[in-house]
Amino acid sequence: MAGEEVTLAVIGAGLRGGAYARHAAATGQGRVTAVAEADPGRRERFAAEHDIAPENVFADWRALAGRPRLADAAIVATQDGDHAGPATALAARGYHVLLEKPMATTEADCVRIVEATEAADVILAVCHVLRYTTYTHALKELIDSGRLGDVVSIQHLEPVGWWHHAHSFVRGNWRREDESSPMLLAKSSHDVDWLIHLMGQVPERVSSFGGLVHFRPENAPEGAAENCLDCPVEKQCPYSAKRLYLSCLGDPDKEYWPLGAVTSERTEAGVLAALRDGPYGRCVYASDNDVVDNQVVDFDFGGGRTASFTMSAFTPLDFRKTRIFGTRGYVEGDGVRLHVHDFVTGVWEVIDAADSDGASAATGHGGADGRLVDAFLAAVASGDRSRVVSDPRESLAAHLVVWAAERARLTGTVQAVPAVTAALEARQGAVHREF
Image (cartoon, rainbow, N blue to C red; front, top):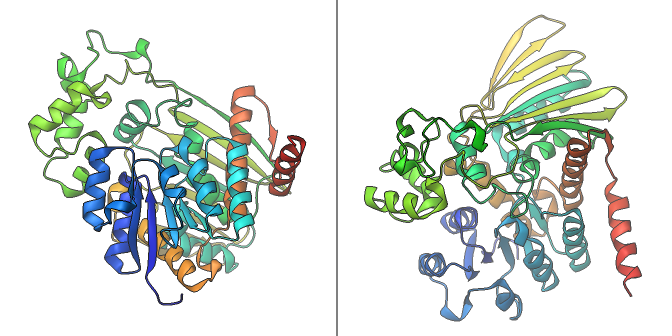
């Protein structure tokens, strides 16, 4: 079907599913022909936006999957814990799958998704969007050129942003492990995959430390109320929901995200009503959150080669920061520029690798969201799977590293990273033993 428009079914028409679908339609590469979305208002708005036939609008993905195939490919962008069901069922129906990260919230389900897509011989693209930035392309090209010699070690920081962490991981959908997944999986599986991409191999062992330090009841300021709208210390609090969400009004990017997760209203009265009645007005010290607000992971790639990763809530929301230590050169990168020092000449060079967009989801992660969708649609249209930068087993490998790191953090041990082939074989053996 080279050169043809790819038809799409969207499972989960929230911020991520909506963004991917909107880009596909705007570029003329894709056309949405079906949607499954549980929220009635969101479902109605999405169907109207894409002019979807009423018979192809569903409240549940199971109803969509029960019909003959309605599109060439499916975008699965439901909540994390609801990925495995639609991804495996739609793959079995012959849909190519663009799957929001993380793949799933358990190792077994991640493996099951890979098995299903391989058995159906369909394309699976996991949304590790960091691989698709201009910055990443320039950095990978620099490493592969040999200018740095052998890469010995990498230091990498994810600055989540104080207000972003409060929005998504204290008040929002990813605040609890039992309702979503560990922070390292929900937020930083991007970064684990990215480090593997740069190193060109999967680590052999990992260790990890971190916890929930600040967003706890005992750290509430004296006199703090349970809702920001009632709080006498709200004006002095860096995590004021009133300040954050009212400041989004009038800014199209911020109205899309983070405000779009709070309310569809674009008035002061609408925002205040949502903060009064919904979870986003809660005091960050009086929520039911349990995910970590800081974490460090150390990676052993074998032969003495290492990497370290830090995730912190206590930063501005910004591009990732990275240092790469090679035997012939050193790189310091800020997500926009690479500062390269050559050990032979002693010369510093600055490589500009900026994208036009910012670092957040509101602006498409530095243009990476659009490039990911472009690559997936091109792969489906042409049949050339190499257009997708990471294959299913590479994505699974990154998830297995995350789970090993979580075991290391919770047990205070160094954990070996299981091989992808071993994980697949173990899953197949377990299935066989069930019958």
